Length: 406
Image 1 (cartoon, rainbow, N blue to C red):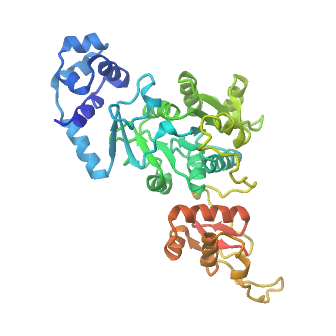
Image 2 (image 1 turned 180 degrees about the vertical axis):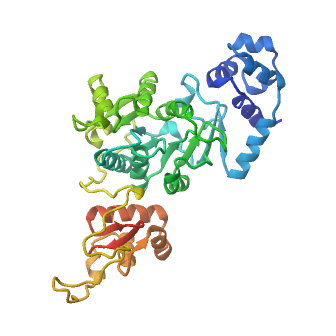
Image 3 (image 1 turned 90 degrees about the vertical axis):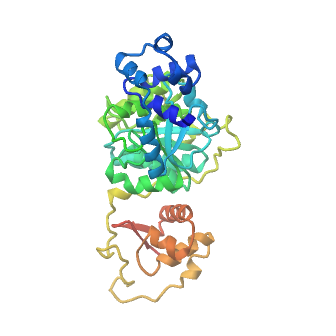
């Protein structure tokens, strides 16, 4: 039996839990040794409850073999505590996950200025836009954004990083082959292509309530600090903040309207000593000296306007077609105006953005259509579209189609 199968056997034992599994590994050295040990050795190493003892006595690897098959079928990769790539930041925690499952490209976490960004699933427009703008700027300046792919603030955090053309890590409370919540499917696919989907749960595991508090300890554990954008009293984001404090991580909180219940948790954290984060520099200054080769304060400043999340929709610009298509150009009287030489108008933009502008000049197009026509890499197109939206020369219309404003 391969070493990996022993790890999957140990991590999937019902009733054992990560803390007892870690204690057994510390005492007996490896899952192979645990498999070969006797009941007296198990009990001497950890307070193993009877249900887990019954599973240990069986020494059945059927479940581990099924997990391996699922990993092969879903293109899921496995990382164990014995692997050199396993993050030391997690290894040092109480009850670290014995096994991690992931899709995408796993960065060398210990070498990254990773920041967890979390908040309410039901943010205000202020909270959502703030998360998007801060994470866009933080990611553009070299920080790795880590969040939980929940709707609301989590989704805005991931999108901000992706729009900056940077990877992001999503820690899931289900298997990495399970899309949850369903409305984040497109974001899930973007992260799988340009970042990392990570979980301690094997493929096929459905999202269940108890998984999410456990998931939160990994989000904070991977990171140097946790930024809370909006969190009502009792929010799950505050659980992540508690994990961060227990793990010795920094806690940042974004202030909000004093009458907003969505900001009650952030205001409480600030009263209790959390670092107030009103702009990206408030976070950067804490880590720049630790990562001078990665972090820069020369990232482009973000204007007041940022593109909204894909699933929130946009208001059609006055005069534009209801289907998102650009109207025929005309003067105030409705008389067609003289055509503009676009090649002259776009010459001040970088070459890739010039190609995007000329591509969407004829009609509204989706991002994947722009990628196909221009032949540019997807991250470059998405980043270019963001910068052009910030400049106000491109708008995202209903149906996630982009049109020219010139």
